[in-house]
Length: 364
Image 1 (tube, rainbow, N blue to C red):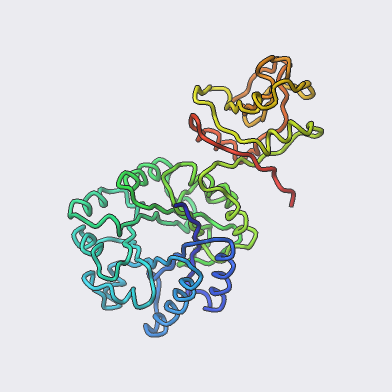
Image 2 (cartoon, helix red, strand yellow):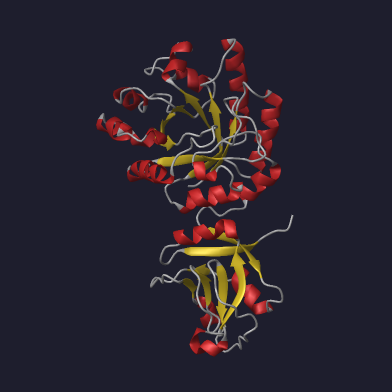
C-alpha cells in the first residue's frame, strides 16, 4: 500500500497549530505522520507531554506515527534498546533510527514486545540493512525511510537514491522518502532552503516530486518533510493515483470532441512492443474504428506531444501516441496536445504494458 504523510515538529509549533494541520491532512486521506525527537531541547516533562498530545491526536485520526530518534536521544531520555516502553507510552507506532547501532541491537529491537515498527535510515548507503538481517531480525517490524536535507545542494543524488532504495525493496520492506512543500517553512533545523530527499526535487512542484518518487517504483510512502503545507498542496497530492502515472497535459485549441475524449477519458497503456520514438496506446483505434479522423493540426512532432493518427493512416486511425523525441510529420498525424514540460521526463518511466492516464492542466 502506498501512502501519503506529513511531518510535524512540536518543539517548533503549538499543539493547536499541529492539531489543525493533522485535521486538514487526515481529511485528504493522509495516513502517516513523521515527527522528530532529534532536535528536542528543554524540559523533558513538557516535551514528552507535547509529543504525547500530538501523537495521540494523530492516532485518533487514523494516522500512523513514526518518531525520529538517535542513540543520543536514547541516552538523554534514559531509554535502552532493550526496552522501548517509552515510545509506546507516548503513543508512537514506531521509531526511525536516524543513526543506528551495530546491527545486533536493531535486530533485537524488531522483537520488541510493544510491537513497534523499527524504521531504518535508507540514505546511509552502507550494508547496514544486510548487517541487521544477518542477525536474524524480524523483517515484519522493519521499515526504511530516507533522510531529508534542508541545506541546498546537499540532497541525495538520483543514482544513490535508487541504489540504496533497491536494497530495501529487495527485502520486501516498506520504504518512504520526503518531498518539499514550497509554501512550508518549518523543519527540525533553522535552515530553510526547502526540505526534500532528492536534491533534484528542491524546486519542483510538490505533485511532480510525488509522481516521480512513485514512478521509480522503489518508494511506497511519500511524506511532506516541512510544515505546514498548504491545503492546495495537500489536495493536489491526495488526487494523485499512487499506482498509475498521471500526466498533466494541455490540449490544442479547437480539438474535436472525440479526440479530446480519447486523451482524457479512455484507458491507456503502453504497448508491449515498445518504440524509441513514441508511446503507443492503441485501444482507441479499435473502439472508434470507422470514425473519420480528419487532419487539422499536423506540424512536426517534439517530445511530449500527444498525437492521434488520422484516417490517412488507414487502420492506425484513432491510435494515441506520445512523442519521445522530435519527429517529422507526414501530414497524417494530428498533434492534439502535449504533456506539460515539467512532467515530460516522466515519459521515460513508462514500461511496456504500463497503464497511464492524462489530466488536463488546471488554470489558477
